[in-house]
Image (tube, rainbow, N blue to C red; front, top):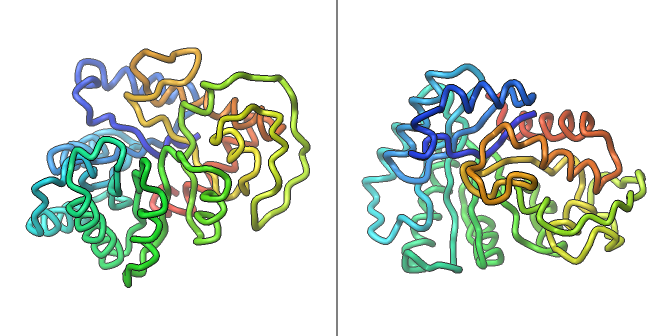
Length: 278
């Protein structure tokens, strides 16, 4: 399995990072993408990637932290993006839920990240909360020819998932997929490639579950967003990449497939978006 979004650069992992990565490997997670969320954490992601085999980095500034965004930061991100094992620009995007940064500043910084990604030939990792339409519009209106995109910790509905898929982008699935009720029903194994199939609703009313039920399998990624959003049965605890298996199990249950199939498919998807993972 590949954890396509983790924050092992978070201080919560400082005391036992080696053990965390050992547990991930024991659980079958052989690739981890450590995502930067500001300049110091982006540098830390690069350092962690250099230290551990199978660990990679992204560099970017989270929308929470762009209130005083300066173009000088883009120059530093460009320099960081040239480091070995940096595979994407991000996490970047928009967050209109908390509005910790003014929306105009968020949009300006997001546009700058997109332009940088196009310039250096890397995909982008997008954070979008209560700003899905705006985030996709910013990407689509950009002249930058980005190498790919994932809407990480996907929070949209089926219609927005359709728009993301139609744009050629990916959908990141995290711990919240395990939070809803589990009916035990098994969906049909029939799958139509190239678009969303109708959701049956048999997996509850939560949008993310319906998205996983209906989305093309070749557009799904799995991620932990460690140390946040720990999946059931670890909900409320510090999340870590080794818990990725619980997310894979729930996606497999919803799609009526073996966990091994979901691990293989989502890993293939991750390598397609991030070729350096190969």
